Each structure stands twice: as structure tokens, then as C-alpha cells.
Image (cartoon, rainbow, N blue to C red):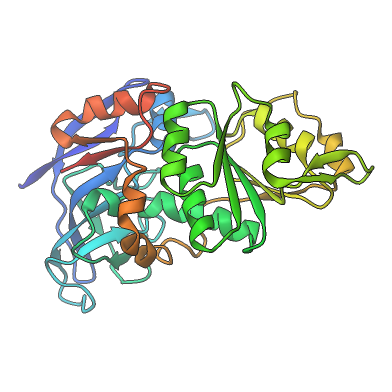
Length: 343
């Protein structure tokens, strides 16, 4: 029996690297040799739990990790006509019948090989050009999340936008906003290194909210407007929350002009410190953004075209032999921005 290495949740805040049987594709399946896989906040969430809850009693089971893969086809079933051995591919984790890859499904992409059942280009796989490094291609899934957020915002060329949170999703949203021609994009964070990256990928300005008053800076950058009561507010049209902190939400409420929009893409931490009543004073429209209903492969061609720009989002490239170090980096606040494991 051929085996492979695979990563799954272990004890709380730990991973297990295990030997499992290497999958054998059926007639409609494809086998992908993983060459790079990103680590996401969802992965670290499962690690904090020690797995995923199952059943009414809330018991925890271990699960295979990894849902941001890029790799190459090494075997295809007899009935697969759109793919060939050697194709470089990215994967839709939600497009397979055995459950979401790396998020409770039977398979995880933080493995040497990944079985794609019912393999179909455009549904669960997309081919990308040879000139794109595998580590950058592995950003396809999170950049689809960022793209959906921008799509939900309906930002146009004349809009003035602020993005809170210069992690991978916030920076990805910044890139997509600028690629669609949005006039002015500000990025807000408290970590100077992240703000430098924001400028490098195209942000027009940055604000360190630990040192500066966000509302005052946005007014300087986007001009002065008013809320529904005529009170002075920043001229920002769209707020994107890629941070998930109550202080961010409140900063948007405090700054919003009449008719502004706020797109919430970050997972929100529960808090009683948010004045929802303040939204009335601006008629602030709150828009939630979850996942990528259509965007998972819509982004692939542009990601390939602008791969050098997206490459700047990766702070650490760690070989699979050191995968425990990679997860340690990802779980340590402030230690890394985007960690990609290479194979």
C-alpha cells in the first residue's frame, strides 16, 4: 500500500503529521500532487478547538487540514477528458462530493496528494499558467474571498474606500479595488509592516489606528461630508471590515456619512461595545460577505496576470518538512502575515 504524509488536528493547538493511504483515483477523478498550501485562520480555529464539533453532545473529532492548495495533476481517471498529467491546478474546496476540503470533509489539502472526486474544470479545478509560482497560485482561494467582498461592495471608479485590517483578505481586497479602478483606497491597521505592504500592493494611503485618529485622517484624505443629522463626517463612501474587532465596527459607525456602506468580511468577535443606534444617524448600509459563491475561479486569470503583486502578501514560505513550524508561526499573533507551506 502506497502512503503519504498528511496533516490533521491533534491535541488543542497542535497538529499531527500522519501516514495515510495515498488515494487512487476512480474513472471520473483526478489525483493532484500538492506543491503549495496556505494556512488560513480557519485552520487555526480548528486547532484551537482540537478538531471540529460533531454530534449533539459537542464532542470533537480530528479532521484533515488545508483548503488553499495548488499543485499538479499526476493521474486522471479514464473518463476525465479536460485534464492531463502535468496540468498545474488550483482547487475549489467546496466543489467535491465528500465535504469541504480541509473544513470537515474527508480530505485535507495539507497533504502530499489530494484526491479530487468527480473532477471537472470550472467546478472543482482550474488550470493556471506555468509561469505562476505554486505558492502564489495557492492564494487563489483567499483571494476569491477578498474578491467576493469587493463585489458585494459594488465599489465604482469614483468611490473612496477604506479597508480595516491589512491581513491577506484586507490586502487582497485592496488589490482588487485598485485593479477595478477605484479612485482612492485607504488601509487601516496597527502593525507598521502590514501598512508598508499595503502601500506596496497599491493602497493610496495608510492609517496606523494605534497612533492616529481614524475619523480625522479619513476626513483629511476623503474630504468632509455629513451624516443624516448634518453632523460632520468623513467623505468615505465604503468601509470594508477585514479585521473583525468591535473597535473597527465602531470606528466605521462614528465616521460614516449619510448613505455610506460597510462590508463585513471578517468573522466578528462578540461584543457589547458597538453602538448600533449610531447607524441610524448615517443610514449606514451593512453588507455581509461570506466565502465565494461565484468567484473561486473568476479570480484565477487575474491572479496569474498580476502574480508578482499578489506574491507580496506571502510573508513566510515554509517547506512541508517544517510544517509544525509553519503552523506555530500562523498561530502566534503578529509573527506572520500569510504562511504558505511548500512541497
